[in-house]
Length: 374
Image 1 (cartoon, helix red, strand yellow):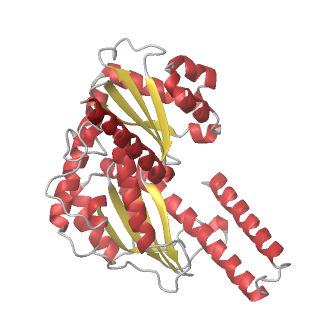
Image 2 (tube, one colour):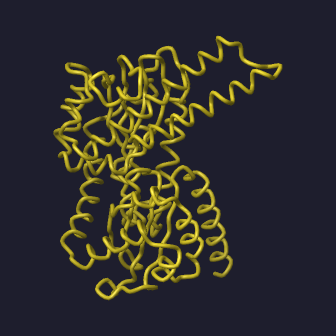
Image 3 (cartoon, helix red, strand yellow):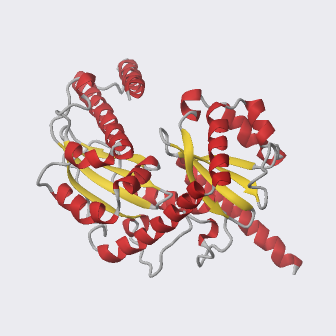
């Protein structure tokens, strides 16, 4: 977390430099406005570091999270005990946090609303944080850290105001095992669709800007059947965990997952090209190889599911969870998969909206061609 804090501090310096340069312009800020903006930037940096500490604790030591981060006797503690603890064991909570993308919302000097969204679960943890913020970077992670006073954990569908009678498995299984509306669809479009919907909703409700009193907004968040929502979310998570258990129980699949993890973490461009020889995927290999080592080193095995093409492995970046990769081993080659046998793709979920638009445009064109040929 120290290196990330240094990077954030550098961002603050750049921001202050920009403000100093702007002062020379006719529309320059006043000194008071510049100081206020600098203070807000500093607050935002501490919020970001707090988010990182919260997520790291939930991922590495989830059993300690309530005591370290929840305000005793608060609504957050009651919600955690009523919704999270009874339905999800610490190991499952850690699985959620490993793939959860931090979302920054509105903030003031002593309060902020933020989210942690995992598109693979299609679930979001909303938290409202309040308290005295640290005055120096050394105090981040200490007992002076603010606490969570309110939280809500729900499915992405419920957060977006959607109602469904059946669980949606499209973020877990390609095509959602024939889920109505997207039959035989690959896994990634399901992730992009869920990510895009939740981001639109979150940004509309909780823009990341200064707010005198940031708090949960109604927006339908409280008006939903929590029991039914948890039933459908638990069903989706159960399918995901079953797929993970299958990988752990199958030596060949586990060996491939570990091998792909090593290739992504430490492989050079030429080494990766030997594993992923399909020319259609050369762009994926080339762009991935350009990532800094500290970003590539965070990729870990996160899922495994059988598909019509073979076995699909999902790897997420535990440090930058918006990044994920998929590796497909052809059917019947699990025990003997060698270099060149597997397909590789990787994506940045920050681009989910654009990726989904390109995908849907291509699918519409394909259906048009097929219709014309009939």
